[in-house]
Image (cartoon, rainbow, N blue to C red; front, top):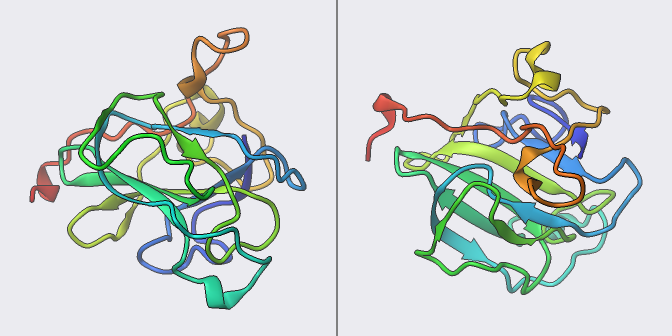
Length: 179
């Protein structure tokens, strides 16, 4: 995956997205791809009825297709800009790390290529959390993927050659975030 935009950059300045990442297949590649769960949990929320949006159209802000996975410890993962009618699990469905969730699309306020907007949040406040990734490539950068770099995810294990490394974050229990 290619990191289009990382933490505290561009549109990732608000409390709800300051630790978010935008992933794509490449800087100019709008090919849709399967989004997989970063960690285990249960589907807490989903929206998949918005049509694809025109590029950089601010009237589509807040009208993105998305899924939220509750990790059971007060944290959740938010996956935004999914394709219409592509979300696979229903609300309440348990998911395991690596399970397919849906397809990337161009829903909501998106500028440029199809991409996945991903962040870990406190489910009570929806404030974005700084959760380091747990792979060798990002280790040298404190577990934070860097903009304009490619990374490989272990969440597609069993596909292709099976030589994938972990990219997506592991969310551990956070005692201060109980509901």
